[in-house]
Length: 126
Image 1 (cartoon, rainbow, N blue to C red):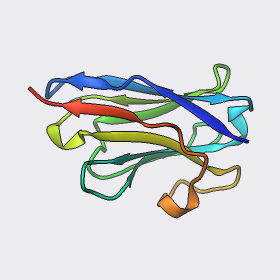
Image 2 (image 1 turned 90 degrees about the vertical axis):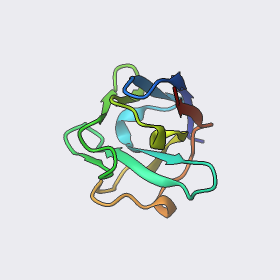
Image 3 (image 1 turned 180 degrees about the horizontal axis):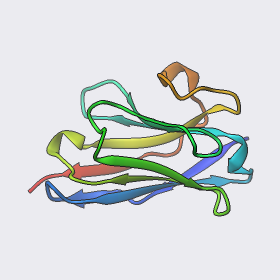
């Protein structure tokens, strides 16, 4: 059973930064493609970013392009989401998940992902 443990959320002012972590528990992360999603209050869960197994291919939602960076350290069994220049509209619960071992991070779709992390809340407010 795949399990992810997330950390790193919190309250930040507009323009600030946060880094989210998604650690694999009980399995080797380097076999898996990983995606980050978010769900704002009253809205559907949406894809934020996706990273290939080796980290050489990454995609971002238009809304976060240029502000967020996804990365992975397979030696630490962890994927990160560095979020800079945060805006109030980035407020959401963020989740990591995997579509498995064979997936192209071109247009990550919610229904392709499973083994969701527990979620971590990000609030951007002054």
